[in-house]
Each structure stands twice: as C-alpha cells, then as structure tokens.
Length: 221
Image (cartoon, rainbow, N blue to C red; front, side, top):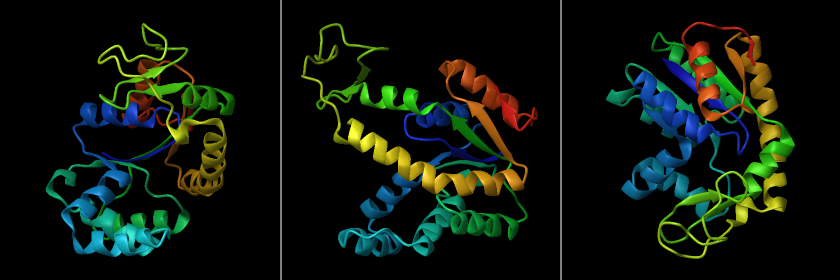
C-alpha cells in the first residue's frame, strides 16, 4: 500500500494519516518530521537542507527528493508507506514516480481530502492550544470546561500565530496554488480519489478505506 495524502490545512490530514497508518500497518511519513529528524541527527542531507533554511530560502526540490527517497528506502517502508506533505509540486511528483518505477513499484492511490473553504477557516481559527502540556481545543466543537483555560493543567490557552485569520487565508491560497496542478496530474493517471472531508472523522476514514481497498470511484461522497 503506497499512498499519497493531499488536503488543505484544517482538512484533518493528520488525524486520518494516523488512522490509515494503523489500519494498513504502514509508516506515516511527514516531510516535516523527516526534515526535523535529519536536522537533529546532523546528517549530510540535514546539513545541506540547513544551509538553505538558515538563509531563509526554500529547500530545493533536489534536496527534498533525496531526503524523502532516503526515508523510503528504510526497512519499514518495504511493504508500503503513507506520504504526507510530499510531493508538493509536479517535479517532485515526477521524481517520486521515477523512484518507484525503478524499483518496480507504483502508487496505490492519491487521497485528496476536500473541505469547503469557509469550514476550513472556521476549523483552524477556532483552534486553541495549551503552551504547557500541548492539549488542543476548539472554541465551538471541543471547548475547555472553563473559557480559555486548559482542562488538564490549568494553563491559559493560546491561539497559534499561524491559526489566525490572516495567516490561514494565506496558507490556503498557497495550498490551492501549489496543489491544483498535482490534482490534475494524478487525475490524469487515474489514481486520485476525492474524499468528502466535511463528514465526521469516522465517516471520512470509512470512505478512505473503501477507496484503498478497491472502491476506486473518482469521488466518494
């Protein structure tokens, strides 16, 4: 099972990624996580990426590809993987295809979780986190017992800077610009499945399972 997970900020990718990885016994590979791991371990690839990051520059596709490909060659990926955050553009997608083809593999599916823009903004801007214990809340769907106070440790909750409206709108614009070409790319390959992310967490997961287990309609609603 070799899967790429797409979806805008706030679509619930992280939650679904954990459920998919557990259900199919494959590693959840987040590009953010493997970048941080390489930086912590001070690997040659990590050092190379850090040179660009220290200058405030985007890490080039060539370096990103090498970091991801290095991770995909680990023992736990032999029976499959779930990629989250990669590929981000067409050149990365083409490199991933080439990397897999050289090893006699291909992607099983690309899951694209779709959520209406207004719902995404509401989900993200309503998030609050505890800076001490890391507990997360939502002012509408899962508020703390006492307004703006963490249930677990009593600390004052905060709204992360990237969860504020201006930042959210910008993040969504960037995602839409970067991802639209990927959606078209994988649609042409007939491996993209659009999933309605407006449903409950469990309903979304059931639809993803159907897609991965063979119910390969182009859209599942």
